[in-house]
Image 1 (cartoon, rainbow, N blue to C red):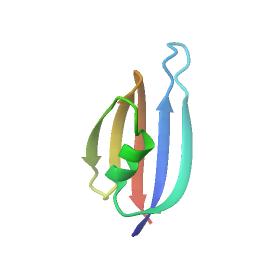
Image 2: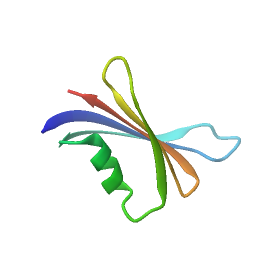
Image 3: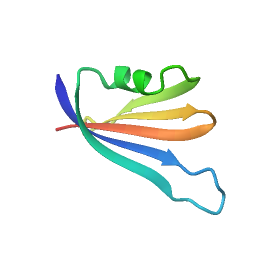
Image 4: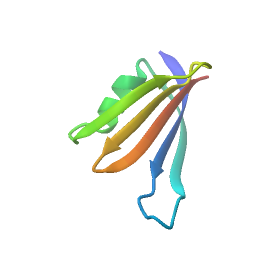
Length: 75
């Protein structure tokens, strides 16, 4: 298992409010992609996975017409 810092962002759909909800957590998991699948289990969801140069794994997620992002940085 690996330990990650996870940043979960929920983007606001209101046109006059560009703030987003941001949650930070430290978790120990084997596979970040499996974590994302389980987090949104039972919902219609699509996502794109990107691995940044520093090793951070970013999932851009769309569920219920709401854009979200989960970023995993290994600790």
